[in-house]
Image (cartoon, rainbow, N blue to C red; front, side, top):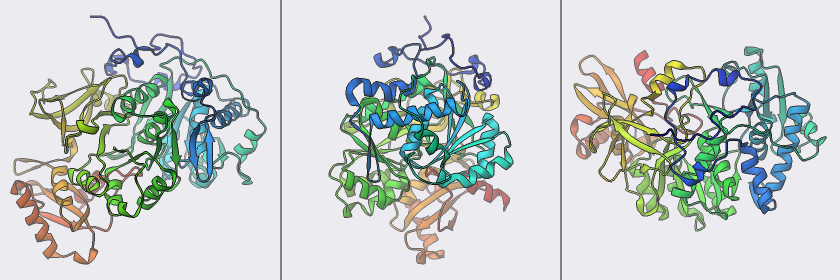
Length: 557
């Protein structure tokens, strides 16, 4: 059996700085990757630069005057974005001396300059590391040192923490500060002034398809973030799998969403997916349920991307807005509970497309849409990917049996300088996502829990998310998180942290009410023996529950 062709594999690299390449895991620990399953993937050339494909090619194809980005009252065409990218690329090379393969840290909210910075770094053949706006100096310094970064480009509004990071990571010697559009008059925005002195026109560096394009850090739902490495070809691959085959993307689509561009969910949803076909996105620097819904109404958005929590929060407000333009709603970042799906559908008449992805895989690999949606199931392996369920022995189990989800396709996990995690995530060529699933006879995957969300209590295996889903069905419950709390008699007991819609209802009567509710809805041994009321739950900037923080609290007490 012949080995599938991998675009760029073996082709000469354009990188002259090999720091990142030298810190990839050995190739025998990489997952199996296959570009032969879809014609679009198989057609990738050995040499490509993602900035040229997503931006320059759009202009060459006649889309230069089409709207690309809506931001506040401005409309950025593809040509305006290209010209901004070119000016910034000239600054990176001419002023900062950036060479192919060097790493550049990016720090900004969702605005046009953040998009331009992504592509300018790629265009000069360098590697970008986008960071969440809410990260603090300690976290930024960790990333700077892990990637040996000496240049950061930051929105002027977020300068304080990146400047403070220099004291912790002295290797960070240079910071370029910009405004949201790169054309502001802030006295400290040195990057804006440098760009203003340049003219458009920059030839993209002739990178190999498997030259490294970005290092994306995981969001920290299980502890210390880890750097995951992705190639130029990977950015094309995610745009050629989910959007045309599941989402059904069109050139006249207008996207909006809450995920930050530093999160790979946001990168795909708001940048790569629409720009692959000449569509547009609305960029929002601040998010709230009201802001998202108002933006759909004002900009006539056709698609919205957010986490399950966002849909649950928006459902109560949806009736106040005109959402008639909205045709697609995509959820990712964490499991979509069935009650949230049903609540949104009841309030809007729209089905949520659930998508399972990971930073390690770059984007979504299991999903379904339209009539293919089965309520409660995440979906099936999307075109371009394969998925199965593995048992404790690492072998596929029959349909209906519970086990670890394993997936492979044109993208895959390559951790930066982390051999231990690589060996845990990639096994026998499969990416082991950390999710526990059941696959039915029709190929649909039904979520059970994260590996670390399984609770073993008095010999019973209990999936925390199942209990969460039942609690969310109760009208008193606004949010909840369920973990296994240490217990001397049972090993662990089910503990629920609950945010009520009305905090005045907190008390022992409500605890008993919710416990009885769970006992009636699912097997009684699964009910939460302990319930603690909270005003908020710990979440990442992308909205993911940080259950590990709750587990740490329980262990410490």
